[in-house]
Length: 192
Length: 192
Image (tube, rainbow over all chains, first blue to last red; front, top):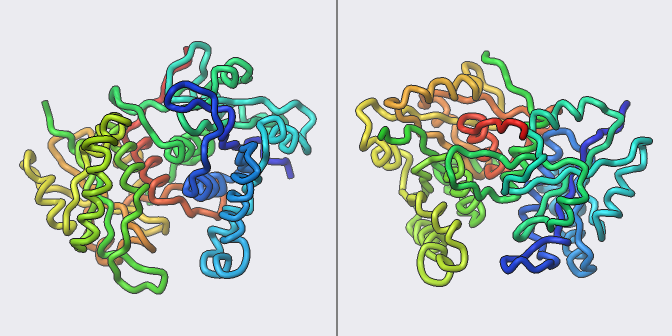
């Protein structure tokens, strides 16, 4: 069986804050739950939570652990199954290294944000690229006020932002992740 | 200009709890934020939060109010714009009544859940139905362990569940709402 060639990383550093300063953003409990559940639903095996803060790493482990052991695991086994794919990791580089094992081709970094950027590709094009199962892709999702310009400059692929049908475009990272996964991995059900 | 013929209602009653009892579920702060932002991004004008509990109604108003007035509104005006479309309302019937104004055709109720049901239609079929801008549709989203069987029995349209690509299918209501709105209102961007 081929290793799953798409993974997601939720990046808490390096990201911008409201004042365009590069910071480490704080974890959001529901990001971890929602994106784990969406990732699992769309067949991913790896969801990385990237933060260099040891305190925040421990918090992320505790959130997953609550549903993986003891009371939480028994109360809601579906939640356990989703959180089992979470890996807490200190940097994007470490996430790439981890995901690299099992693939010979180097992992390609894919980034996305709410703003239009030149050279970006549509999600349906990325969907087609994923058909080459030997090429691993790590999709970076920014928190706070978004991934730094350096992340965009060094990425292999920049995805176009999700388009609503108006000027307003302020999806949560949880909603954006769900829509992206659906567009690149989802299937359309037929009528009964 | 034609009134927007799709609205969403996040239903906290009547829904099931884990033991299949009909209950009023508790509000989740981030449901309100995320679904308001997704609704606004995909051009909706109405997002109803349905709960018969007066205490919970006050809480929902307070969550919206924090971002609509004073500090929050200045700090994050995008959040304000999304929460402006939220209406807190005691019942599904009241939501239908509210949404009915501006339309001559009766509002049709649309329901969705994680399980397969006979007679359900695919999201792309519903997308096509929405082209008739004189026909209003209210899409009900269940919280807790889902909308009651009575909601499904009395609905005009049952949508097929969102398909991942495996057996696991446990999206959060926030993620499911985002994916549904994208499928029925989103557009695919072209490559640059």
